[in-house]
Length: 416
Image (cartoon, rainbow, N blue to C red; front, top):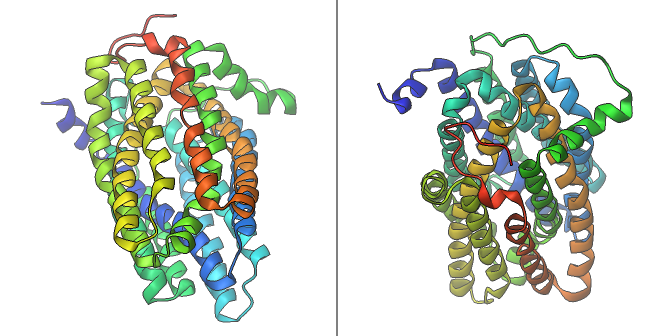
């Protein structure tokens, strides 16, 4: 029996896969939907969209700092279910307010913060839960399969978001979005495998609790490199989070339905990335494969600002960059997640995962606010060009670190 077959015969992995697939669709609709709601319903300017992106990043920072120890000391499945249900409840509040004519930017900001915080908790708990469910020997395959569902969601989610927001209006589209999280929670509730009791560790001071994830990540040189690369990604990714939707809708003049199709095209690339990451790892080694895929993703991001304003040319550039960017982005994501899970003990994955989210969230606040200001001052196009160039620092950090010599993870990785 092949490894692939045995993984699919793990009923709880299959249920987790279904739940995360549904949740991934919801997350994509939320990601595109909240900025669309801000632009179409509230006529938000670039600065306001920068604040919206920054609020989400701030929530990622806070949850990343505070949730890691709690997740490491707790059963992960109830956390996953609770995060799904919280996102559903928060999103339902938006259409209720909109249908009453009471939706405001502050309400949208609070909703974005809560949904993002719940999503971060979901991601950290899921990352820590997967080794329990399938074991370390199947991590690369398991992460690849979960990334494949993310890729399918990347195809369907943004397209669904664009169509829903154009056909149903924003409030009704958000109701559909909330339903995806309820469905995900229902599937997670059917998981039957018991989790091993978490390791009992003595309580530490508040400061040591929230910084332990950083210290654990910094102590492992290869994980330290990933943390630094994650920091740069968060900074310039914050600029894109603030301005990409605005650039497409206003600078390029695309309707929401075409924007959704362009973003959805990236899902096809993401599906390629699911297989590309393990393929490159087998031929180059884990570390070099991570560096190569991140470099290619950076080049793709740099190209976005070159999109012309005619509709055909704009769609061509956005579709190409979505396909290539998502292909290499997903490939690197699969490799990075598997490497972290393999290099670190399962008992600390929650704290280290929290540190990664907190780091990205902290610098993304700067990136989003700075991106909003740059968008106001020099226009979204030039601001995105600057951010695209900044992404090139990420593979450079990998080249200058021990990451470049990391080989396979299906056998024990030697210490640096």
